Image 1 (cartoon, one colour):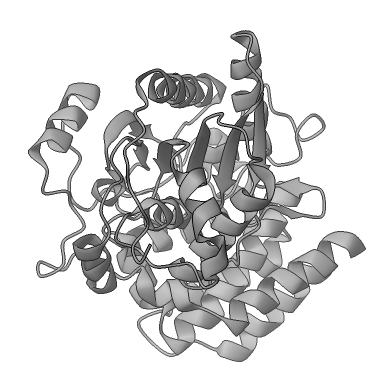
Image 2: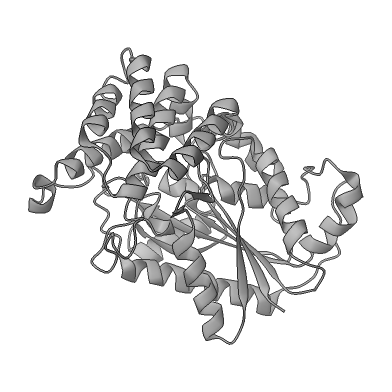
Length: 394
């Protein structure tokens, strides 16, 4: 009987757009590691709504699990990237009420008893200041263009320089008036760059984002304050996390950067996002109050990064939860496998990078991260207990 592993993309994440596979590298890594130990793992990439509320996304995750996990008693694992980790935590929490169809409750209870681990990767457990900007009218338009740029960049390696430069110029006026008409033209032009199949998928993806942005509001540090007060960990489930941060100041002016205009523009866009994410509010801090987590970070890194450290989307200290598996330099999409490297040429792997952050994340670090994630899954299976828990209202 196979082990089922559910991979949940983050806010504005996706299962697949054209030939671009969000979790392609992680799927291969997990299944290969199970096979090397004589076990079979089946990875399911969950196509949740990219920007709907965490509750709606968690409901979609639960339904996908109910449809595919079977009736056997084999372990089930969830790995959530970014907001996907919050979807998993809400789903597993004994205090949550996400079921809309009460007839599914008995089957859902049996499924949750099989849940062995939840791995959160670069998840904003305490929110992210970037969400506050994206929640504004101007921020919503910028986000729309940024997502088009992200998908195009991952697909092609480098989107048209003129379009990226226009977006950068607009981002540079965040403190002033943002020209929304310019942002809309950039978005449409980026979509047209892709092949027909990818364009259709991207249009559908962006249409979903415009129709429902519940998660954007929920990921502000103020809103996550409520989440933290109401969502609790499920007994018998191993919670483990991966956290990363990019260097402050982004990519330096190395010779390679100077020879690549796209690298300069890309790095500048990343720096804007980094600075927005680095904003702090003393009333709603994103840092962990658990001294055990601070000790884990200090032991792993030899120091504790400042409160402003982030991966370009989520503050580093907001990502800490449960057992810390790995912490180090990587940007928000490096960690799921979208990074540059000598062994990952575009001919062999078209999903090369997101934005140039200067993190230096590479194949060796990615393999280390995946080793620790799967080791944690095996440990969860070995130590799993089956508590007599019921969903609220049962």
